[in-house]
Image (cartoon, rainbow, N blue to C red; front, side):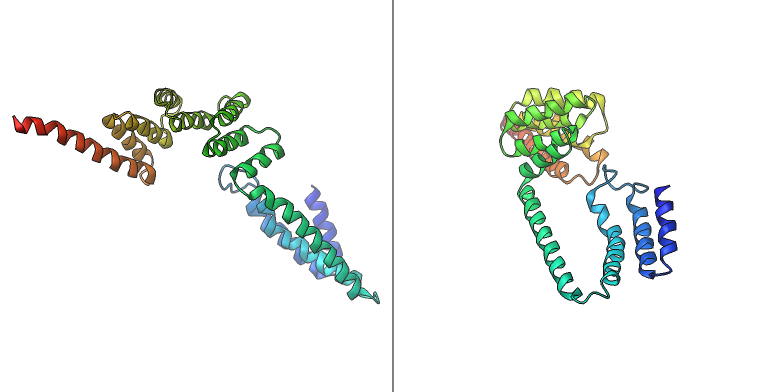
Length: 248
């Protein structure tokens, strides 16, 4: 309704300035692909989606301001000063935002605060902490993610990976097996389970799980590489077993 009203006003005013109609039509036209009708990834919306539609608004503002100050005596000086102020403010905002993009910890830490305790961000921040070796803090965020949304299986997978990295293999295996009971079509979990078995030297089980991962996701490069290594290790073991028999 609001878009219809604004569109009607713009069409009425366009008789005095065609740039208004051009800018508004640009805005509406480029807004269609980014309002969620066609969803890209898990997010329904994101700030980056506003960049292209905003060009239309900037067209309206730029030409509108130019028309507004056309009869001013000192318009060049005034516009120059205003442009300088705007650029200075944008520079300040950019400098503030860049601080959050230093690494995953700063990015997801800030995002967690900005999103208001969101379960997905707890998981992402936990992953960043785990990659930084802060396993205790990471587990706290994984658990908090599950407390907020118990059905969020990604956080349980993150817990399993954390256990795997810490060398708690039996606990990691238990976590991955339980996950696969809830969701049997998850290639990443099969790959993780295969890695856990490989670290125990159970290469047959590892190979079995890597192959299941590849059945679900044939282009899964990590699983392909892991399967290759597991097959080589299994071949070495088989060769060592055959050697004593041949000597006999």
